[in-house]
Image (tube, rainbow, N blue to C red; front, top):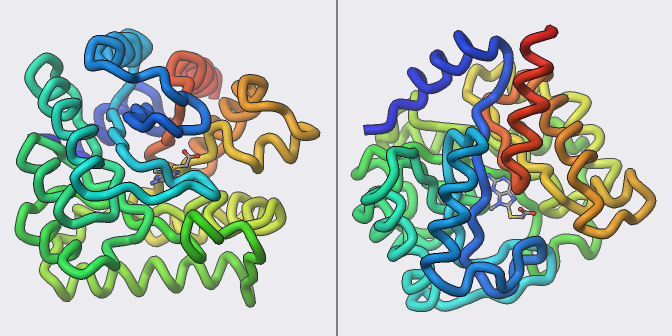
Length: 278
Ligand code: 8Y7
């Protein structure tokens, strides 16, 4: 069984102050950065082997794109995409898997197939999601978002984005604890780019300590996102690697315990050098 605390401890011994690297494995035909590359299971397996060789710590399997403007997919299609992939990873490799979904039925079958972490951009708000995590005792990443992927970038607005996000996440923590989820099973994530302008994202990054100081492990996902493009004068997706690596490295320095990235090898290199010279 995967134990996040000992993984974090082992990592802290090896690379002090540096986060675990969660590698994105999209199993969707419409993912903006890996679109259409993973049509068959052999291609997926190759990608997993590559991420492992590059030093990935957790593999995040997702079957429904949550990028801004994306369409929703049915439970059946999502299951058809992700379950064989989780089974394959768990049979062939020794690596923790997270399932990127907000749907309780997908969570249930993914956990049955061996998933160790539920990565929910909806913070377990779907009816049945909290209960599922409480019963199965898996880890859960609670992410903040405003709106839904279809409309969230239209007009994001906050009183005080840092306070609003922290308040929301701590409210979800309370609901999780009341439902019987153990405290050490929770991970918090401000949800960069999910109903946030560049200003909002910048404020959340600047005050990441607000979440880090809760003592829950913080996950940061900024890889290849629009905020990187905006900082880099509208860089297209293939030109966001160095910016993404820089942001993930800084997130680690600011106390993030997990970074979710597409470019595992370059991120791991940056983190290794940074932690060595720190
Ligand atoms: C995040 C995420 C995405 C994130 C967590 C993308 C599934 C969009 N972003 N999960 N998922 N945090 N926990 O650009 O920031 O990768 S999808």
